[in-house]
Image (tube, rainbow, N blue to C red):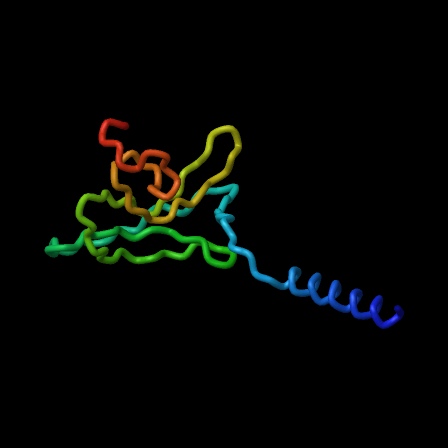
Length: 125
């Protein structure tokens, strides 16, 4: 009887440890919110257009504890999609400055397709 209780307890403990260390998929989105905006944009020379690419201008990005300038670069064009450059937006009512990473949008409404209930609705504006 004692051996049975020890065995059941050991199996239960092993199951709890296994459940505690099992990685679960994460759907949390990490956002950057600051109490102050980025510095003014730097001047960049925009290169000549390239077939099959679009130019994404430079922008300020938050790294560690300061703004760092990320120079512009070429993005491969995605037919049927609209590109939105990375940007900072101030939320009204003391909501701070929020960083919006670059994204591709199929219907041009500004909502990332992964969060859009109707991502292919051409009548939505």
